[in-house]
Image (cartoon, rainbow, N blue to C red):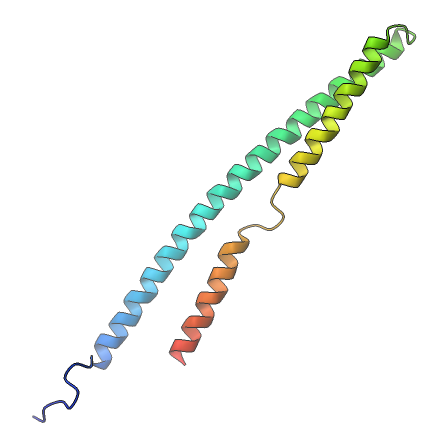
Length: 125
């Protein structure tokens, strides 16, 4: 048998095994990152939904208060002031809830997967 000129170089089988192992590790890490990102987005959606629900409650209470004040022939200005205050709170809470809602789901994971795909294609070519 002829001795190898480059004894420190790995063979084809070992290279394929390393590439497979690296790909498995990359996939495992990507899944962990995607889970983490999804959990963060779920927390953001929860807080957005809570703000939206509070806005809805304040809005309905404000409308009811205004209706009660008008029902009393606009006598007590306190009812009108409370209604306007609650409607303002509802608008503010609704605005913050809408702004907090994620516009694009798992954007960072999508970008990482596209980058990993490009790197894998480059190395496999």
